Every structure is written in C-alpha cells, then in structure tokens.
Amino acid sequence: MGGGGLDTTNLLLGILAAVSVLEALVLVGIGVMVWRLYTHARRTIHEIEQRQIAPLAARANALMTSVDDVLTDVKGITSRLAQQAGRLDSAIRTTVDHADEAVGRVRRAVAARVIRIIGVMHGVRAACGIFFERKTTTTGLEGSQGQGSGELQGGADGGW
Image 1 (cartoon, helix red, strand yellow):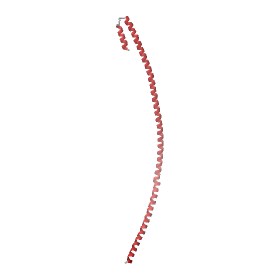
Image 2 (image 1 turned 90 degrees about the horizontal axis):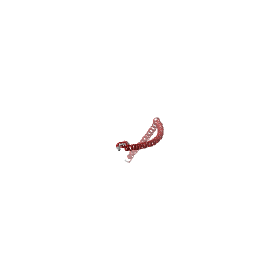
Image 3 (image 1 turned 90 degrees about the vertical axis):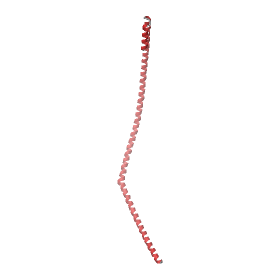
Image 4 (image 1 turned 120 degrees about the horizontal axis):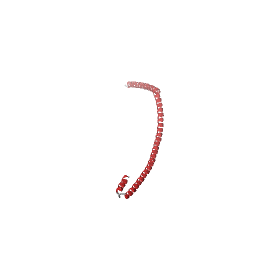
C-alpha cells in the first residue's frame, strides 16, 4: 500500500509541475503579446500625432497668433476711439460753454438797450403827460371852465 500511494502522488506532482511550466510559458507569451501590442499602439499613436495632430496644432497656433494680432489692433483702435471721444466731449463742452457765454452777452446787451428804450419811452410819456397837462390847464383857464380840460386829461392819462 505504501508503494502505490507514492507513485500516484509523484504522478500528480509531475502533472502539477508540467501545468505550472505550461502556465508560465503562456504568461510569458501573453506578456510578449502585450508588449508587442503596446509598442504597436505607441507607434500608431505617434504616427497619428505626426500626420493629424501636429498640422492641426500648427494651424491652431497660427490662428491664435492671428487672433492675438487682431486683438492687439482692436485694443489700439479702442484706445484711440476713447481718446477721440474724450477730445470730442471736451470740444462739445467748450462749444456749449462758449454758446452759453455768447447767449448771456447777447441777453445783457439786448436787455441794456431795451431798458434804455423803455427809459426813453417813460421819459417821452412823462414829457407828453406834462405837455398835455399844461396845455389843458392853460386851455381850461382861458376857455370855458372845465369843459375841454376833462376830455384832454382823461385822454392823456388813459392813452398812456
């Protein structure tokens, strides 16, 4: 009994060793396959980068440079427009101030002349009132007492 059991155990151990060696060979084969796939994928990715991505990146960089140039131009134009707007605003304010000043001068000049004319008119009115009042007074004393003087005085005061 003792001899037969060992043979079976040895046979089973031999089979396990052979399977282990076979598994190791399969794992080494899988490792080699994986390494080949990895290098092939890396080479393919590198080729795609060279053929597709590099030209796109170059175009994108050129486009970004162009956009940067346009933005720089736009900033310059915006700056100049802001300066021009400031100058225009200043010119408009100055013009409005000068116009206000001119209107004030014209208003003062016209007002001074109108006041003089009104003063002259008041003087003429007062002179006419005094003149007609004397005339009626002398006419009233010489003529029929009080008949003509009321009309002339009423007309002189009411007319002016």
